[in-house]
Amino acid sequence: MSAASFLNIFSIVSGCFPVIAALYNYKHLDKILKIAAAFFLVSFLVDLGLFFSMQLVERNNYPVLHFFVLISIMFFVAIYYYAFFKTTLKKTIVVLGLIAILISIFNLVFVEGIWEYPSISNTILNVLLIFFSLAYFYQLLNKQEFIHIEKQGLFWINAGVLFYYAINIFLFMLFKQLLNTHKEVYMINYITNIIANILFTVGLLCKPQPQKTI
Image (cartoon, rainbow, N blue to C red):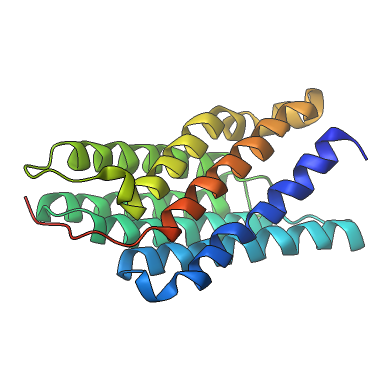
């Protein structure tokens, strides 16, 4: 088995880590972490389904990726909507999420098409989540009362989001070119996915700490 194949399999398997953590710590999860846990379950099932479908039948799975991008946008809009305190930020998240969904649907129908890899939609998702995660860190680090940020479950999940999407943004943008010339570069995605899933797992094992509006 090649290193790329091993990392690919381990990357997929690592997707079950946050799911197991959520089941183990479910009674301590607040609304935000339950939404995040639901997304991680969907993400794991999609990755698992794509892997087995490619092993059993060689077919184009890009339509699934297009719809997964849309699902991801909706989940993360919900997560960050509840994570932010200020009404203006909540409204901004909803508006940006709707714009991202509309662009992704337009791309799916008129630009790249459903049978092509969703580079544009994935890039939009990456930019959106990098903005959300940085804004959340700004809110967390500028709270007026003292808090242990390492005990905040969403801190670890947000760190995983920023880490994964900030590193992979250029990989998704250039996926079509890299697929034909430098397939080994996609190992970056496998490694970052494993690390992000570990961060998500840590977050879901945390007991939610009280958060006060600032």
